[in-house]
Image 1 (cartoon, rainbow, N blue to C red):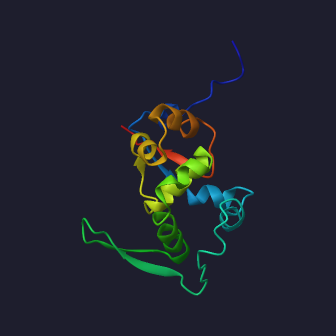
Image 2 (cartoon, helix red, strand yellow; image 1 turned 45 degrees about the vertical axis):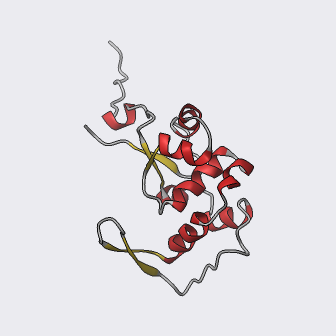
Length: 149
């Protein structure tokens, strides 16, 4: 008999992403990583001159156009959403797939999107999107929403 017990896994950690799995940018991932979100945006995506990072605006009220619900969001996130929602259609063709997915999610107010929906926005097949962001490696904080059934 072995003295090493078998590892116990949560069911959610064993689930595999599918084309209908929804993804979002996990801001906690950025806080826990050795990367800085603002530095990444300013240098890698070169948006420093076009987005006003007004540090005096902590929160902004947003109204959900479908439900009428008002929610408070971070001023920084709001500035990002506005910037990314105004990018030209061909922007995603001139950047890496991970960066394109990141931008698409932020343009969508970081509301979870399926791999299928993301693939339509980045002009790539759902399989390619899923293989890139649906695996165990987390890129730019892009995570799957794996609900417990």
